[in-house]
Length: 93
Image (cartoon, rainbow, N blue to C red):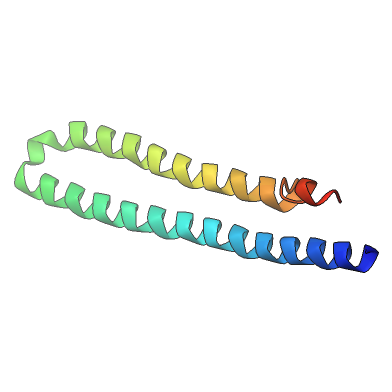
């Protein structure tokens, strides 16, 4: 019985490591794509209407902060799973 529990705990911890890696990598990839698309559209807009540059720049930085916030939430959830794994509580470990 004790060996089964240890095996289940090891399995849950292994799957948690994979989940953490997927969450962090998806957040990084999404943020990178978001910044790339936003930066490209920002440069296109500035090239078309240079007089709107200050307004567009402020909005771009606001959106950049929101993009970073989403990935930081993913990092926080990943750290929760890594250090205080709620899935281990269901096993009684």
